[in-house]
Length: 196
Image 1 (cartoon, one colour):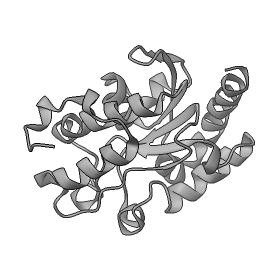
Image 2 (cartoon, helix red, strand yellow; image 1 turned 45 degrees about the horizontal axis):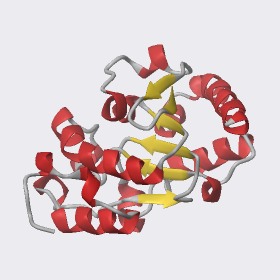
Image 3 (cartoon, helix red, strand yellow; image 1 turned 90 degrees about the horizontal axis):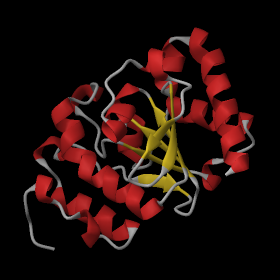
Image 4 (cartoon, one colour; image 1 turned 135 degrees about the horizontal axis):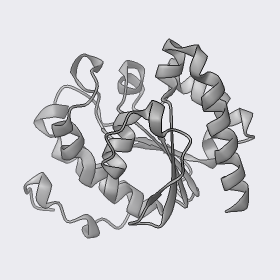
């Protein structure tokens, strides 16, 4: 595949997740030159996809999304609705760890967005759960605070998928008082999952 400007990336050229992952690893934009590409994990045929913000330190080390403390909490949240990582698919809006683990900038979100769109197009989920504001912003362009929009069903029109925004597990680790609301969101997610 010829090297080209990222914003001209022809999403329809990718026919498999492995082809897309290989392309991202070869592309290695200047923002990612210091970090490993963390593509995704789980069942590529899953009807439920979780989208996080960006890889953290442990994810960068292992090359798998949500394997640090946030990942352990996400695993427990999945268990609370009788699901496992093997039954869902987990990825991040940003494919490489931002420098100093900072919140992704709009430029970083924009640079990685074609990859997220291509990944979702190949996955074809029926339900998407965005974890935190940056993931929601990347997917739907919504800039509203996660505290105001969490727990409300939205639509990702490109795939006719239902989207439920909720708190990122890292936020819940910093503010455990929000775990009750996240639990309510996951109950909604479970109900939708069983009925889809």
